[in-house]
Image 1 (cartoon, rainbow, N blue to C red):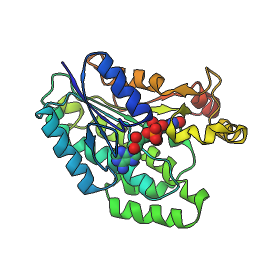
Image 2: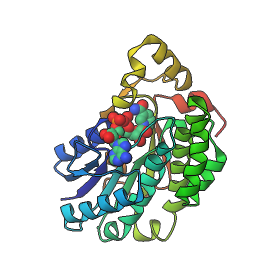
Image 3: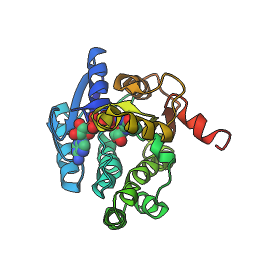
Image 4: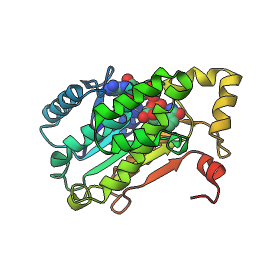
Length: 258
Ligand code: NAI
């Protein structure tokens, strides 16, 4: 049976994905700050290394797929550490292990926010792999208050979606038969959005940025089903893509401008 590593498995989309994959009979090893099989902090280098070590111990070095869901949306610098480096460094460290699988797969969670205004300088710093530089820029944004600090979130997701495209076609991923994709959800009802969605004012603000004409806000399991497919044996040729699973928000906002 396949073994899946799911980050962010303690809540929301990660929890729903872990539950769905378990229901389907797969072995699932969850990673999270709390409430998962492996307790780890993906916001820093040591925490990521420890997470990788613990994953290898829990799986006897057999990992078929990684589904990276852990993320935060605070207007703070650490958002970049968790959302970008907590995905790329963690996933990358497990590539040699994945490469031993017959059907290795990686699927990560980006966001509709990857299309929102961001800091191009921060995005480039992320993609260059320079976490210290990225954090310096991110702290600079944070210090200018919540509105500028918020740019850390779309920047981290833009960087994830660009990393997917760049890394997906390399020898390291494509050459090892590893599809590497992201999903970009619209508004999903989870702990991350609960408070904002609890008032009409909050919902209006969210909906102005992320209009969802098809079926409105989604439950986490909706995103889990797409992550499960992208990381399944059935996916042999989709790679480097960010798939919008957003009730039509991308089509509404970008129209023909793709
Ligand atoms: P959530 O808050 O319910 O779950 C996120 C999980 O990540 C939590 O269990 C949290 O403990 C874990 N996490 C946070 N920092 C961590 C760290 N340093 N190390 C290890 N684990 C850590 O939120 P949700 O909505 O399930 O978010 C999952 C992903 O989906 C995130 O990447 C988020 O940016 C993305 N997303 C969510 C949307 C939404 O509307 N809820 C929309 C678009 C993207």
